[in-house]
Image (cartoon, rainbow, N blue to C red; front, side, top):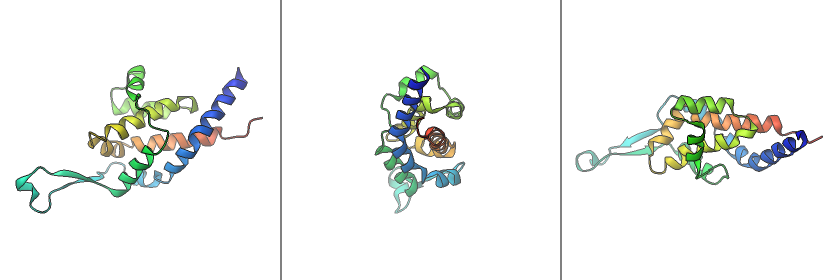
Length: 154
């Protein structure tokens, strides 16, 4: 049984390591921007009197979102994770991220997916994820899990 667990853990590491390595470069920026807004409302060119304002996102945030979209870390079935673990608040999500080990990569993927995919229609989700350190904590936790388990099998 233990051998099977090691093989499965190694499979998880091999599956997600390349994608996580692509996202690690955003960790310093995500940490720096935590607690701040990464979007501004465009109100130039007299738009305020004739139309509604719309958000303009930080370029690095948009690069991060596009990079995540090119990975295997998105799960369109993320609502299942939310109902299974009964996540209701950001605090629930952050607690789950802190507790997640290598075997709970599906939980990390589910939370990441909610914010990245949900942000496609509700842009405030992207800014909330940066502000509340959700993106930062997920990428950091994935990195820690992979670094811990990325050892040659004995």
